Image (cartoon, rainbow, N blue to C red; front, side, top):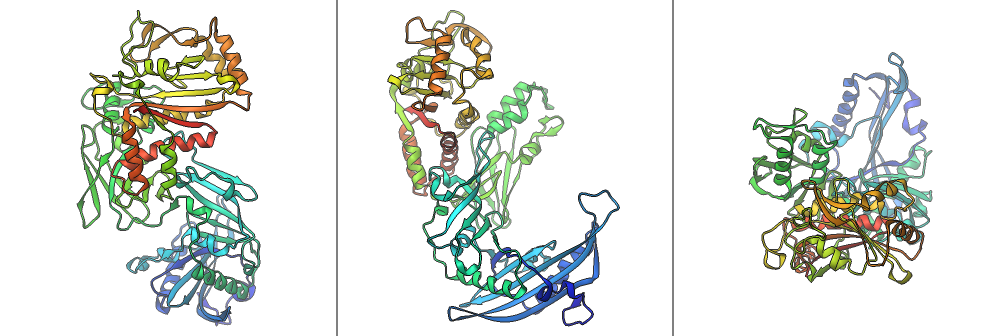
Length: 638
């Protein structure tokens, strides 16, 4: 590799004289600056990685570098000393869009600019087709640098006139049916978004307009996943690039925390160092979908049990959270005691991920151990000793401000006495039953929650949209509500039995509600709606055991009402701007005081191992409803 002082080097690859550079890279805060020997070793290792890549042929004659080129820049009377190292590399490789055998010449480069301000070190890395210098092997032995956080970068380049035009959002999901991501664009997007639910939403990338004038551009984008900043500049000379980087570092160093719109969002965290896992909750609904997917009976075991028996055993094992305890301080392992299928679970935090080790069991799905499938699908969520940390399929996240969201959640939970005689969700109806059992949650819904509802449909079944949905005409201001119930069967009514405090049952009912949110505003003229109308004219069949009853699926408080009259009313309501749509979770196993105390603990950052798991589940329901313009409601016992 040539040094820039070598007169035989290729002048076209000299970044100082030939480059037309963008500004797109990551700002780090290392504990110390590179020594010259470390920088030389870093660039050599990065070059060797290209040479070792079988898909790339290094052209050593086109590879040049410069180390520790120094420059002083004065900003507002403060002198900043830059120390810039760079490397430019030529190599050949197969283009991805051409057949094998064709090659093209590519140019890669890396620029590492180091700045010290008031005894604090900063490092800006910009690269193309070259590896990350902080992932070199010998760097691992040093203290790894921290990336300047996404929010701090955004706040350092903005002023009072700045506005966020675009936000690409990712969601901390607790169900397969939740929205995973969306992009919102407007003149001032950050202030157009409701704060409700943003604590579990990640602003994955933002575009900011009207940024500080000293950057010579009006727009910039910042990615949260990498903390990568891209200024709207595309053709800077090397000197201008260095000046812009110095200005950026100067602004970052002097920026103060702001109570900005971004403070409401969750943040992607860079490290789990020092965090202790406290609980792991498996995604029952995702497991249900995997192992019961198309109805095929594909679960097998050496025990000779049937698919259905194995499936019920799996669901029972994974329904409630596993509480983790530290067992090995040296390697960071935490574990949970086993249940009937999974004998022992081991969780190990890494820098940016969490390794979950599930012991192999003899239950297989298509000849693959179920433990391997669950691990591959990342069908679990982990909470930590630090209540602000949360690990899910989307990665390691830091919860945003949840105090206000906890209050909102508390305001959608209603306790009622109508469930006091309930001892099961559906009771034990038979062929002579004309009404739902008086000791069932279904009876409480029909004769309590919906006693004033003019039209009510029982849609409970293997392919249900909801257990019930009703239309209350409400004097010209219709209320359309979907009801999703979950209650364990017990020997005595709720009044005399213990309060549930687990998260398992909530998983199932939350997933059912989220799955069907998109149908809340379905028109009665919709083909799918029409297909179900015939079933609603028939009698209710209990899905468990296919028990036929004499209970009508369609009921009305209006005389001479029919399905046809109901569908016309539903259509009129759907076309009315006055109609309120609701999605209601009905959970008589839980008591209002339980949620009141839980929300208080979570809002005060004092939640225990399972509090956050429950909070996330109910927040997922609440956030999903807000996204669809549906009012969320949770009914429990008073």
